[in-house]
Image (tube, rainbow, N blue to C red; front, side, top):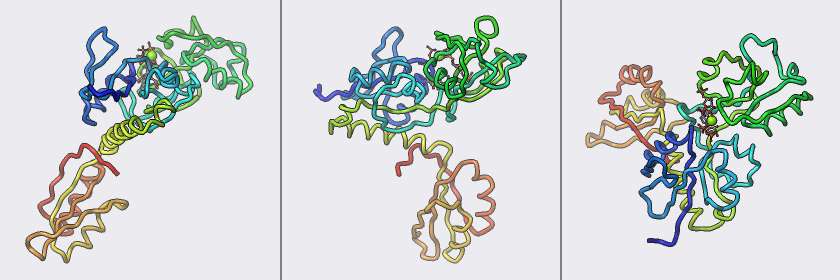
Length: 292
Ligand SMILES: Nc1ncnc2c1ncn2[C@@H]1O[C@H](COP(=O)(O)OP(=O)(O)OP(=O)(O)O)[C@@H](O)[C@H]1O
Ligand SMILES: O=P(O)(O)OC[C@H]1O[C@H](OP(=O)(O)OP(=O)(O)O)[C@H](O)[C@@H]1O
Ligand SMILES: [Mg+2]
């Protein structure tokens, strides 16, 4: 076995499954077994450790892990001094950032943070909440919550600061958003010293490139078509701007092939126009990675 090993933190909890799924598409198979905090990965040079997202940045900062995946929210909240390798735009179920929001019961009279003077606020992010109150000149009691925070108002708290993605937990608990404190996305982070090690840095940058390339390809497809040279300009003008289509010659010198990438959502409106402009043999195919 190689003495070169990268210690990688995989986030337990909300990001666990989506992280493993993204790694799988990037070419790394991570397997979890119940009760074990050491997931396996099909790369002898990587050692995985399952760690709570809240603690990831701290362990990366301390060098117990060389790198890890966690939310920007917890990097800020823990004040950890880590190197961000890249942003990875994925959450538990969607590709949207999560939002940390101040919420009250639907029927609460509270309309803004200013109405919380002297009130009790329950949250997992005490630091972020206290800084927000201070910024708005409000003095309130911020109580740390271990989770299941949505059930606390109105009996155990007047308001909460909680993370939301789809909003279903807030709706299920009859909570109304008053204000948004911040948005957060997932980040790939490294220990600063580990990032200075050439072998680790190259390994980390390669993993980051593969992960990013999978996210970049989402929602996009490749379109291939043939066209007579005289119609080429007309067809190219219909293709989305910012793309640089590949134009290659065919065995028949009067014809060329065009290959281009576009958002899957625009295909249905573009294809009929391409056809009318002379494109034929149009083929759409799925792509799994885009490396710029
Ligand atoms: N739908 C989501 N709900 C909660 N957190 C999410 C979601 N999507 C992404 N995240 C991110 O995941 C991290 C939350 O992970 P955390 O360690 O708090 O675990 P958890 O999923 O809440 O686990 P637990 O079930 O133990 O509370 C945060 O960085 C957060 O921004
Ligand atoms: O807006 P939504 O899509 O509903 O997602 C947000 C919910 O998911 C998380 O709960 P988690 O499962 O971590 O439970 P917890 O409250 O015990 O942390 C988070 O704390 C919210 O409750
Ligand atoms: Mg949670």
